Length: 364
Ligand SMILES: *Cc1c(COP(=O)(O)O)cnc(C)c1O
Image 1 (cartoon, protein in one colour):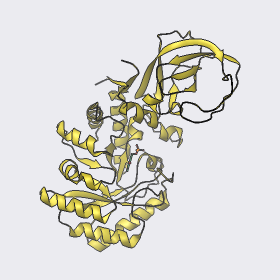
Image 2 (cartoon, rainbow, N blue to C red):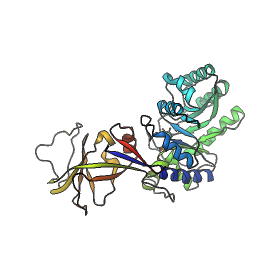
Image 3 (tube, rainbow, N blue to C red):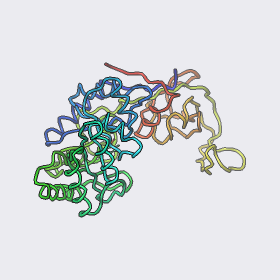
């Protein structure tokens, strides 16, 4: 069935091994983030298994449903919910996850209550907002009080503190903001009279700092998804090369359903497209182009796809169609051909969650 998303388990294992070695050389423990797998297809299981073979033993996801299904399938390694939990999922959280990221007193009290009910202790990573302005506590006094609260509540185990950068505010992790995280961790340690197990310095966007040897020494935990699975951002956005990483682990394949020569500029009065936007078009004259049976419903946005065929250029598409300029492609493209594309994070996440895309694994 097409479109088909082909996932290289060997490639993921390879990348997990390389990133695990890099991080452990810098005293950093990894929680692998499985966001880019699909709980509906159970694709997190083979992906997590591949990461385990590569030496990673802690896992996390942003959705409680994924963690619950992993447990139901018998997955027994430690699991962390990496989105702040909802008050409506306390029962599942305590049952299935070992730890979660937190920033709200109300939620912490609710987790504690549920943990006592289930006779469990739930691990807490308090999130600190260092300027990216998504989740986390900004005020130092509030952070100290929240840490003390975790110490006082018997159903909670304060594992440490963490931060998230490069998401909403697009803030670069650096020695200053991560240095501040370490400083805050040490203030908490002074207050509670013991060492914190984890100081979590972010996600894949912190890897360039690690490679440069500039990550503050006490940062000992990262939550990594993209850097292991796709491994495109570090090289293409941050211009940092980590030797041996494979960047072709996720490939989407779509079938050609029309090949014709047509104008490149639409004819008539341009108003709104299928999504209500008013686009602009470059007039390249008449071009040879093909249509593929792959649309925004499958991949979200065509900007997040790159063709593997030389000379091919994606012009755009709509819900169910992709339109490609093949004027500069050497080989002949025919109806029925299968075209392959690499995906960026957004398209990967969209396609793996889409029930119209089938999944195939390469390598076991
Ligand atoms: C998604 C996410 C990560 C992983 O991000 P990558 O860029 O894929 O490494 C880490 N932490 C949190 C809180 C996240 O939501």
